[in-house]
Length: 152
Image (cartoon, rainbow, N blue to C red; front, side, top):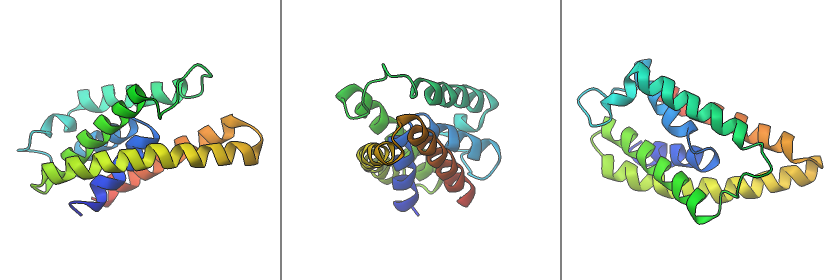
């Protein structure tokens, strides 16, 4: 658990940067994840849930824009890795292994970014349009984030 779940939340961050921390915030706020007494306790607040959810929703919209840069350019990839590391560390903090979670989340974000880009390109080609592939990727990120949060 101290490696697999943080890695997988990192994969979610690789798909959609803000979905991973939003899922962690929701899990903390709903009581699915015990963050009290850790550095990540603030994530369980209604403010964190609201702000991170709004950022995630905004990302779903901006991802549809043709001007949005590739997730593999350094700035975009760095944001995904930072989000994955942060989210993984928050999960790790709940089991007293934040450093392990940090590393696993960062590695998962790289895997998610590159794997997600490949999968989306293949789906776009198969569907002959990029928008349905993007919406499918959005759905996968949301469901996976919530499933991971609920599994805790």
